Length: 358
Image 1 (tube, rainbow, N blue to C red):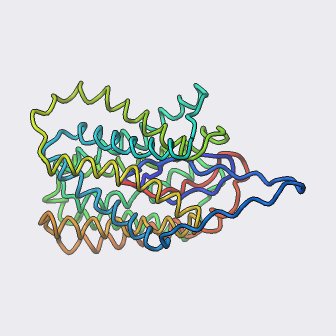
Image 2 (image 1 turned 90 degrees about the vertical axis):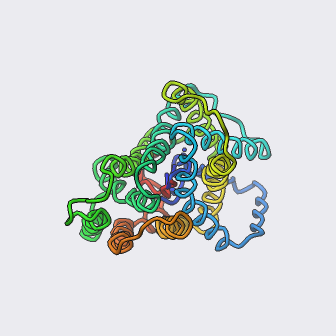
Image 3 (image 1 turned 120 degrees about the vertical axis):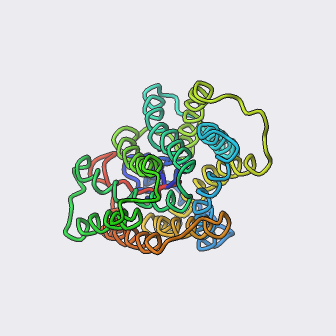
């Protein structure tokens, strides 16, 4: 929701962790320039007040509960309305952060054009697909489908990124991951009891994230804007996209029930706004390899929340398949640690590495 990230970028900076559902899937931070020998030594950045493990756990909970919030929101609002409210709330949080840090918006029309495409694949499309999917499938299944994003990412990066070549371990991980998907869906019993269209939409949402990551890497390197500025701009463009689409396919709500309304606001403010700030803070402090481990906690939390709070049914194949998916995803990322700590050989090229924000 990963997705995400997510999921906007800079020339040779290490990629952030791979994801929901993006919240937003923004670009990695700019690479700092080394000062000349005569320049004064910069003042070291202050250590965050909150330990990174606490922030890691908070990010896992926020993204894990996002699927529950989507489900609650769609009880009263149309899927496009849920997505619009989510993006609007998330944009508001990042706008405040940009104002506090005095960040400037990108000025290049070319950059805004690329951000429009990035916002579609990393925000507007996957957020809407997950919202539509959860009108017919459990939030637990949506959370597990979100975990397939690293698998799609590896498959696509082999084709689209020249630096990403498959190894035997990663190919095994890819096959194992999709075997886990078939286990979750109960392929041996003909996928009985599952809505095929809803499941397909959730899987397409997970596929949308790596498509957006690869596009971002190829087009938004070296823009000169900060991560926060590009991320906030991307969410703003995504909000405009939904502001156009939503009235065309939905009618204005006649009531605003408290619980679904709070769920949509929390989904955006926490899952799309605050989560992005937490994600990049973790990347800066502990590195992308450790930060991307949040990906493996999201489906576990989503499943627990759906069963405990929404009373969703849990068959044996769902947790077993989810574990297989996560094992496969871990194998496909087994070389990400070494790659993520090295600069790309060419600007804007490298392995997509954001967490799939729901």
